[in-house]
Length: 528
Image (cartoon, rainbow, N blue to C red; front, top):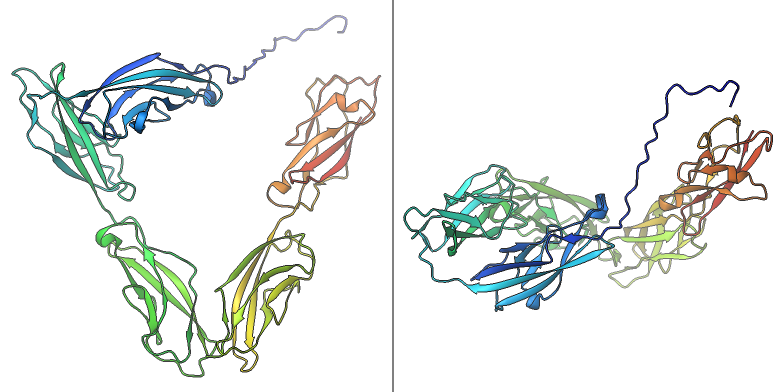
């Protein structure tokens, strides 16, 4: 604007990107699809593929296909992603079906009709050399291998034969002219599917009416690729001090997803033990009687489960076994766990533990460990645990109390763990890293100039600690001149600044956390 006027040497190129919105419906390649299915047919045989396109981009052009009408008896199914329609149920097929298929992009949808004629296979001069074929593939193999060669006879001289798979699967391919069926190198997982029926059709030359079908049964051979794993964890056990040899203390169970020898599970103790043994079914029993003074002693017995594969896989688990006297109390549960909010009212009951004396004597309860700040008490008569001091998730999110039940007459006792998980409550407001912020700007700065970045933190966890920022409207018009990024706290100019009109702006910025009942804090930003 000076005199004389000066111009920029180069013009600025401004690129404007148009952001796509979902405003186009899907369009099928045809309004009507028509095809025929020859019976007998098989589950998984591909009937036809429908296709729709959407002029939108990205996620707005991803389509979902479904059959909405005409699928009487659920005879057909459609792949929701690819639009491939396959046979689902081969019993009592009608001679004609008219399906209505739908393609949806999540907002818009279109439909098309699919007419399927079901026809009987005519007697054909083509015959396969075998009435059925079988083959095996090895689990996990990534090698593409020939598994079987199917051969048809009966074609006229100089008429070639063409083979193709009616129920396509990306793991199989067939040579169209030789009938060589092979794998593609995509690995098989026997634990997901242990056999496949590959339906092969042969046609003579270019006469689709001269056809024959055959099924190749493909079995997946198992490989030892799964380790045993223990179920119904965790394990705890008690055994009376006067138990006889052979008494079954506890049974552990491990399962293996493999089959045959690979899935056979054998149990043994990791370390030789004087008092305990385990049999092939996983039953831990007493091998040698205890001395009568072996009271309240806990043994940690490690059990190994090993499969019969080569090489073999194994898993191990530790079973705590407590030796108890006739008078030793027995807790009703092997362990207790509970979740409580950090703002729970003082003197509220948390959990009730209960132990019974085999002799019917009175049992007293006490907390012996796991309460470093004395925040819990237990009623020594009833076993009810109460909160007696304020909890704070941020400083102590969990407690593992060790509770003891003591027989009133003999003094015999048993211990149990109580896991107390403290749930976070939104009890901390955001705190700005600075009490106030200042910035100085030239009035010549363009719109969109960064002014200052405010930042706050929150001591809560999860969504309660998520923070968003906003400018709070006050009597002044200053907030109209600025914009704040709600997620980062970066303040930018939104209008041209004028020193002569307003020499200083004071902005009130609020940080709000993500709690269900959100908490907030404010700070002042001064812009000169």
